[in-house]
Image 1: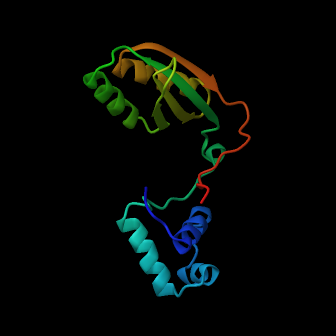
Image 2 (image 1 turned 180 degrees about the vertical axis):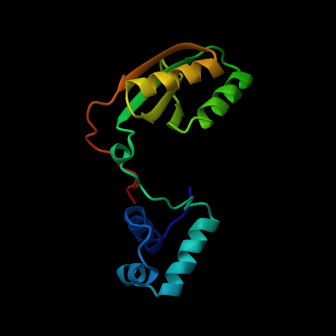
Length: 152
């Protein structure tokens, strides 16, 4: 675990809300000069605490209004199968996250598609690339909370 001081935490908290904030303004909020804030941010990047800066896009505004969670049971529990699964998932831009799970299911996939036909197309491409023991899906009816900022 990375050791962060209070200034690092305050900088990270603001960057998670608005990464395009000018350094001068960010510095005013955390009590540092522009150059000191820049050095802190550069240090956080160099240490791997900050892994990237992105713009968040409204999925509905770009025609990807349906979120689906896909539950997968592996056909095999081998390194080769996992490599194929990882490669297939990474090649599909609709797949936003893949998680290896404990319990009854092996993997949970989080994906964004336009509609049910978009899900079916994703499903067809996925099963064509990798053998799975079982696949099922749950569709999000309402997003009550979607966040990206970590509690610092």
